[in-house]
Image (cartoon, rainbow, N blue to C red; front, side, top):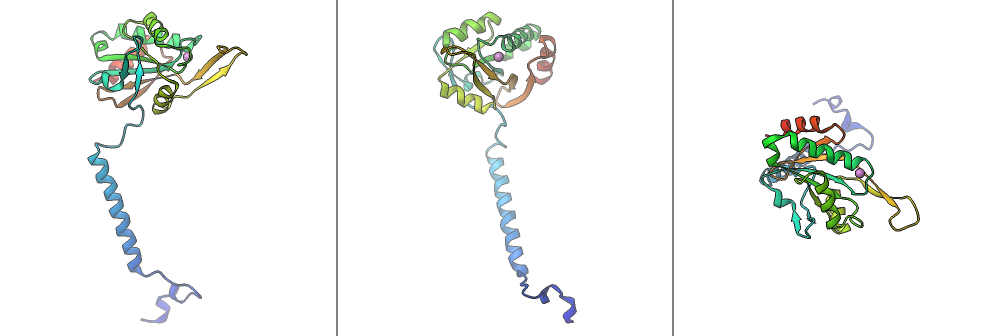
Length: 208
Ligand code: NI
């Protein structure tokens, strides 16, 4: 071989990693990727992107978990009972959509979860939910339980002071409806401002 056929090897101070090292690194990367792929298959696919396990309290003081709703779709909404506009509007739409869904409504459980557990006691959320629809379940919990479920659903909420008193605050919160499947996995987000008729149409399409 002529010396000019390997110019890189003649660079001043340049040392070429041996090709064997590249081969070993390549094999290690391939093994790691394969291992990750096998793990995902064994664990039943990638984890659900949104939602998760929760334990909260319903209006009767009973502990309620996400597992209690398996076999049914869940339509989950986060808000608070003192909300002046967005929450009541959304929950009216949900109630309207439930009426329009006919038989499909029996396979759908609408759930309201408060982000204001300080004021929204079990009795308060129960009475609030019932005012919209007898089908709507209101859930609350400890501040820690609410923080956990809100994090799982990527829900933003924050206290917004409106005065000096202990109850002088409103809650800023994201307003999205989450449709969860009968297996508890996330199906789709749904806009909360489209009206009962549109919501019923969307739900009808998304529910198999
Ligand atoms: Ni609200």
